[in-house]
Length: 165
Image (cartoon, rainbow, N blue to C red; front, side):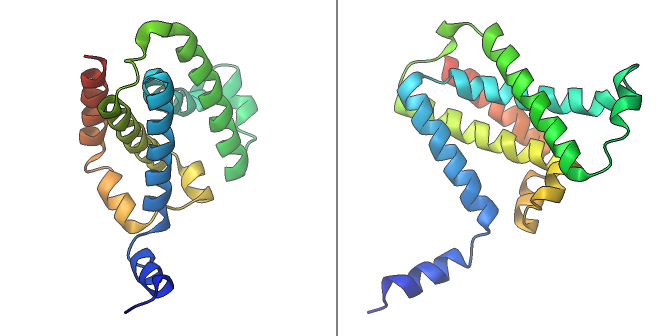
């Protein structure tokens, strides 16, 4: 009979750590959705791509572009994206009404968590500053990369629309 440690090392060696992180993120969002409804999952799913669009537009901004051109390190660019995301999350959270949460139903929580995890992976791969901080495994890059990202985003938004039903 094999011991548990060798079994876990065999199983953990087959899955990249990125997948484990995405599953943990999905579980955390699912638990939050089960407790408080899917409002935060929906806000995250709206704020992350919006923050990416704003982050991509900042270098061409009239007054900010030249000032932010001095950000040369990827860590500083990642911090800038983090600040933009936090501000965008707060703004979208304030825009979305409190009644937006679908209630605490298991299926809605699970779907909201999976949709938020898919959007996290897609947005992460779009920002070179974040990829330089943590380079996702080739499997994650293939699954959530340029060839399939539109399908993941559309699927996540359809799933979130289903959750609201």
